[in-house]
Length: 161
Image (cartoon, rainbow, N blue to C red):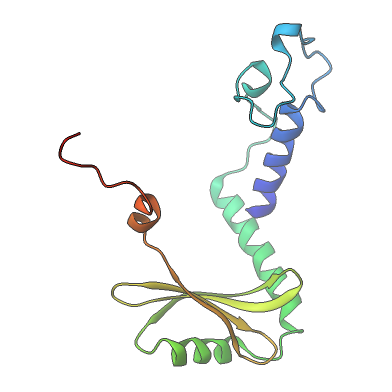
């Protein structure tokens, strides 16, 4: 899924930047020119396109392909990990007793092999990163709720407004 998303995003970027167009694409007139300004509004003909290929793939097939690539990725990295997923789970549970581990995955962060886990209790959710070499916890951070992210730092309206 990530590979498909990355490919689609790259194609969209290339198409919108004018690097890749069908041979019969229209020539840009001065009014159609894309601004070189980094904060320019996104509008104009180069950002309004629909892509229809001759082959469509079902979402289920894409999910299966993503899962297969994820499994192959994990299997390839697993031989470098010195601690197992069970060891990483044990480290997370020792740090957050009573929490349920929603997800744990072997990942790399800038070439550092780690287990990333999401632990949840009744009220809070935590991102816990465990070193895949020695089982030490490298990061333990509470994940803010949607409400906290949306309204963090927002001014409190007064009754006079």
